[in-house]
Image (cartoon, rainbow, N blue to C red; front, top):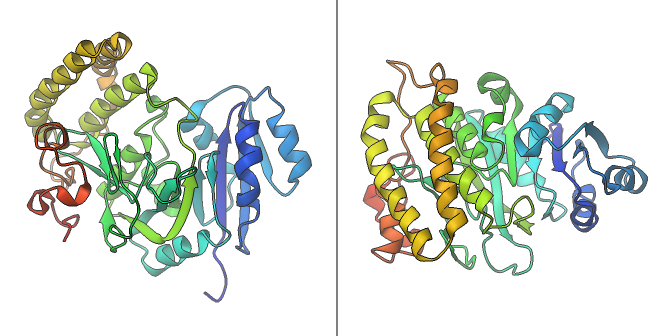
Length: 348
């Protein structure tokens, strides 16, 4: 490119100086000529902001008065960003020097792309995909997310099996590049989500507005993972179930929602019973609270649902990933039946 488009990288952090010390140096060392890095500090009390200000004075610091979590923390920082492209990057992601170039090139090549993500590999086991994003996200018809490279707890090694180009349904919030003009059009992260699945909602809204989401496999980053909430924390269960229900209600056409919801309830009853049988009482209670609160929050989205005449954007996988995984033992993305993927997400 004759001149590099401006890029703003936003890192939200709360009391995680140890992660910043580990990963921020790699971000500062990024080989890209038109880059600003913004630390959105969520009212940390561990000296994070002071350490960054002293160690990396080139990093801009936006100080929030308290812990605004992921959604509000990013939303409050985005207006400070000057970039044509905005990258939301977790504070526990390490990047190689040239990670930005492939992302920018892909965005510049096609103005209909609203968001892209790099491949995410594990920080400690760098031959394997990382849980949160792997090689791009998908959604089954009942709102359960999965990725190329990770379905439920099965994480694959990265052997180049998902390097083929093509759209994905959602890009991970751990490392997502967004077109600023697209954000201006569809809005920022939904702060009612607080954390978890907010990036799926944003990507779904981008697609409803006519944009596409893509993986850029030439870019690879390394994610430690589990820094906001441990994977087996019952709060994670709560947010995943609640936000998944809100996601469907908000973005499905009303008729599709009415068809989907009864089956989703049946699947979640099975998940609840599984938690009970495993003695995971807090997770079982979290599912009940998730349903209660999702019902109470529905009124927030009545004016945001697809309108009559709007082209429907449906979840790309028309099967049930839970039944595929637990009943039919399909543990890898390539084992899923291709015929169940809608265009333009149909895999080879």
